[in-house]
Image (cartoon, rainbow, N blue to C red):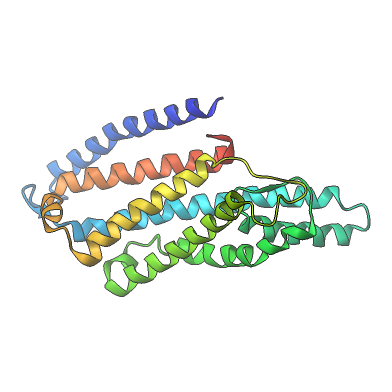
Length: 249
């Protein structure tokens, strides 16, 4: 199926998720499980959940891309294993780590020149589990936790942007056996989730703009519906990114 068709189906799935979310929240409210229906919830109460959701989506996309690059790199290493099986494994492992840091750059063959991506690959693999840890809302509720989460997110985003900038400038000439396609859907989704996280972070930490924060103070049922829909949307589009990978443009 074409990438646009997949995205349209994902959007329909998000819209379809709205009805059961409203039904569940309405049922809980009628049974008194949500407290006073007129109670208003400040953004600081449900904002950390949104921050954790955006982080979880970005981390899932990040891990999915690592898996995709592992398949590409290990496949390239297998084709070069004309010597011994052990040598082929070492080549594949090295290509895997390099390819993780290479972003959307795909390697048709393993070349010594891709070693420049090795530090980025190591950093990306090291940050992946730490990035996923900030999918816990509690870590975003405190000032120090929110700052740390944003620093980690910025580092992950920088690792993803550096290879693209290097490829765009063409420094050092084109690498043998390297193809650099346009940004894939997974890459774009990761940037969008990180951008949304920046907005939530500013609202949580800076507490400004005050007018916007005042408007975001909503009734308890609306907070549950909005948060539930946000979680569903991130989950659906992240699954599409992981399944479709760079194939969806």
